[in-house]
Amino acid sequence: MVESEGDTSAVAATATATATAVLTAPLSLEGGLAAELRPANLAQRVISLFGNVRPGADLSHFQLPATFNLPKSQLQLYGEGVYCDGGDYLNRCALGKDSLERLTAVVAWSISTTRPPIFGFAPYNPVLGETHHVSSGSLHVLLEQVSHRPPVSALHATDDGGNVELLWCQSPVPKFNGTCIEATVDGWRQVKLPKLNETYEVDCPNLLIRLLPAPSIEWSGTVRVVCKDSGLEAELSYHRSNSFLGMGGDGRCVKGKVFRSSSESQETLYEIDGHWDRTVSLKDVQSGEVSVLYDAKLAIANLITPEVKDQEGLSPSESAVVWREVSEAILIKDWEKASEAKRQVEGDARKLDKERNEKGEVWMPKHFSLSRDKDGNWECWPLEKSVHPAPIIVPSSS
Image (cartoon, rainbow, N blue to C red):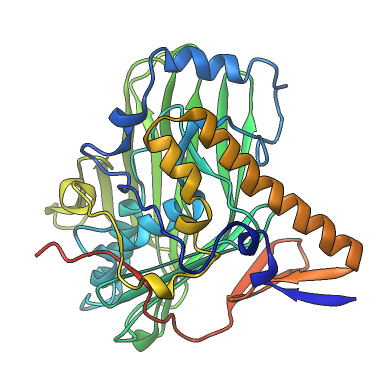
């Protein structure tokens, strides 16, 4: 049996290293892609799209028409949650004076990765071997699609000072429940502070797309932030407030607590309350003092669009190169061209997968090792200790 490295995947057949990348505005509080792309009667079109899908169906490989696609890959959305951050919340994680302050900083950062979703639109499903590599200041972020069935994405990020390291290995599992689509995320995220010998395990909320009785999209579910090194933990609930049968109310509420999981009584230290698209407050239970934990206007308003700094350095597997023609067509609303370009990318992926199977080749990721533990969970580990500077950068706001 022959091993085949990641650069022989579909991306090698759909792009060249000198091809132009198409980069679009990140999802943020103000402006962005929603107003530009939203067609008339969107809610009715979305409901009609899922009219023949049976309840309980796994939508991981559901083929959306190009008219329902954002002009970017899921890898880009994952990456934007890390490298597009107006408040520099990630760097704050390593600056806390003690473990408690650092844990609350990680909680604030985790909220900052929650971006306003757009009802009726989804990113492209990454093809096998697709990568996304971006630098923002001293932070370098690299993602790779390490599996296609099931879809598994890996992320590694490091900063030049060696203060912060991120490791993700996750797989979205969207399911249709008749009146809504709920996308859970299997896998794990780690925030490491190497100089402080602390590792934080961080969950992410589910994405809930309601079709009936009233179309809407929101983040929901419970998120845990755990630091076993310090015995501290946080629990956040993303939920809709004051709703009746799923209608009305505010769908952007977040509420939770910070506590010592190492103590028998699980002593609560802070209470968390607010809205992830506005501000989230932190209340000291003992003193009653209230402070601002997270400010969405600082973190995710008016985010800067990445740009190509080194054209020659672009990988043929780069998301913004792989999906270039599809994105270009979507942006000018040439739906026939977008559909054809999308079929080309996905068709090349299937063709190369078939060829590998016929040759007995086992595809191997280029930047990560990939395995499954005894419980069947995916594990991804970077092959290099640090991420190199990228050909795509987020320009400085100054």
